[in-house]
Length: 320
Length: 261
Ligand SMILES: Cc1cc2nc3c(=O)[nH]c(=O)nc-3n(C[C@H](O)[C@H](O)[C@H](O)COP(=O)(O)OP(=O)(O)OC[C@H]3O[C@@H](n4cnc5c(N)ncnc54)[C@H](O)[C@@H]3O)c2cc1C
Ligand SMILES: Nc1ncnc2c1ncn2[C@@H]1O[C@H](COP(=O)(O)O)[C@@H](O)[C@H]1O
Image (cartoon, rainbow over all chains, first blue to last red; front, top):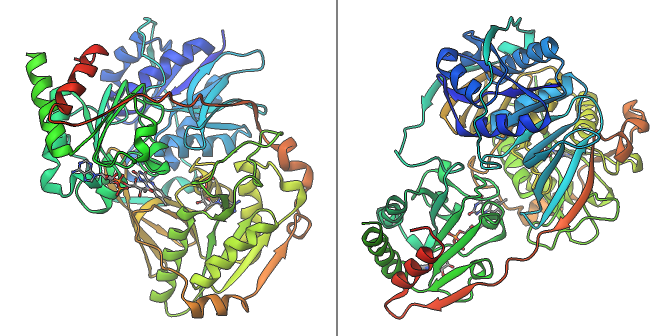
């Protein structure tokens, strides 16, 4: 059966959930071969095997940390040459997309970014994408070379399917461009203890209506009562009330949770682009004319400082 | 020596308009008014700031796009760019990111450059990969997705706020950078700027001028095919209630009914 390369997104060997989704999707197309770059393959390999990796190609070198993107492209190209896969899958992170795109150029292949679903087709993988701020859904194929496809988080539920997952060393020689952009310092993001925004089943977001960084605890309390991630509109981020990493929308994260709660957010097209595919949407806004109400399954016209705390209390009571 | 900066800008359908697909499943560019991609305004802004800091610099704005794309160049010129290059060729309709990057690379090399500045993504395609691909094609460092950028002593430095970490980056020129919408508000064109832009040179190029073969481009030359495009069924309007003091409880009741609690 054809092999499918899966690029592993991990933090020191702790595999991130989107990679498990990729392995699950890859099994629809062939046999997943995982590519693990950097430290921690001992930790990662058993997990990758559990989700169906028949093989784990591993390489570690200081270049992966010390220089931007290109060393990883060199390594993925080496894996590609070693395996001759029928497709290459990467997570749709900023870095995943850049690595995938540069690989595609090197192997003369077409690229599809931000797929939200993937099936096997007669002429290769068929990718579903959501475009124009999620107003349209398209189905696309790569027509030249080996399809390189990046897939958004939350595209499918990870399913375990045990495979061998034997680790093999991948030998990589870095090209001249690999050391072009030096990472002079790196500050890891501090964990909030809450679920990852793009991976969370529930997201609670606050916008300009929250009216100050000091009020965001109202949003956070609701999120914590629901076990949710916290998001923000760009207006809230630009005002400095919440970090940019939490921004939902066109120039922030795309989320597709089971439940999205928007509080004090008007629902501009650029915000909708990032949350429109959520399964259930609820909103709290004091303006009954706010466009967000066009999208909601349930909406409350009211002051978020009244409604949200009451909701939080009620959630806590009901959850016991 | 003068610092030669090329800014890649795209002319896109207005995102607040009702965007559609044309019959050949490419973006319908007639349905909605076009404009300079808002995300590329940030690229123009950073290029102008870098140029102001430098002893001697020249900012060229470059677009690959249909005739109307001149509007995008005019806007960038009125913000303060020095000159423009417009690549327009009927063989380009439907070209994908690989084709577009090939054309941009050829035009950039023809123009001459020390620094290429791009936006983080186009507001229509939103792939956000072109700058990386351009760096690959030009064979120069990629310093992308910067929320802060500066150029000094033949080097570009910047800050990249990633998902997992914030990184400070450094590369020698020539290089390709892209800047995010966190890099700082773009200036508005002044009246003086708008008047001055009318006299600034716009060089028109086609594929022949760049020694490129039309067969490699357009829908035929694209390595991906869109087989279907379906409008997402509009979300059916749900229940909206007015808070009369019990709004939070009502919402909880709804969430419980949907099994979220
Ligand atoms: C190129 C580009 C990219 C963009 N990318 C993004 C993006 O990624 N994400 C994003 O979110 N935006 C993005 N935007 C910005 C977007 O256009 C809107 O400006 C932004 O989403 C507005 O945020 P908001 O809804 O919080 O603020 P507003 O539009 O000001 O809405 C605030 C809402 O809060 C309500 N409100 C106020 N007080 C209360 C209260 N006490 N209780 C209840 N409700 C209250 C008001 O009625 C109002 O509806 C982008 C714009 C551009 C041009
Ligand atoms: N047709 C084009 N002409 C000029 N620049 C472009 C074009 N398409 C994309 N770009 C540049 O590449 C960036 C990223 O685009 P994309 O990868 O299409 O999302 C944009 O912000 C522009 O700077």
